[in-house]
Length: 141
Image (cartoon, rainbow, N blue to C red; front, top):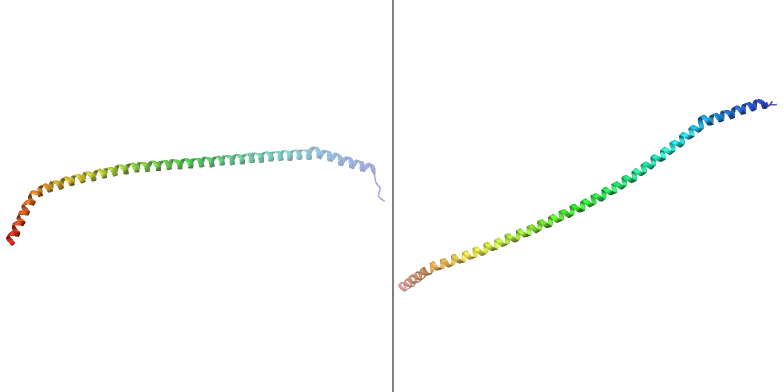
């Protein structure tokens, strides 16, 4: 049958174990170390990305809040400007209405004065016209 040579088998087993030890020292340990370092580096980068994302989100929220406040302030300023403009318009309107009322009163007084002047001028002429009409009626009768 098969002849087993234990000496050769021990030498082959020794060479196999020495090869495995050398592979472990020169290949497997540096490879595992490299992979661990790579994994740590990736985890750190993921943490940084997460932190940056959180910071970005906080900044975006701050920007939104600032914009909201700016819009509110702008709205307040616009409303205040509208109110001031309306108040000014009301003041101007009141002044113009007073001016119109004063002008009306002045015109009314002037018209009354002219009316009195005309009546005073026409009153003597009225008597003359009245006497002329009476004369014409007598002559016609």
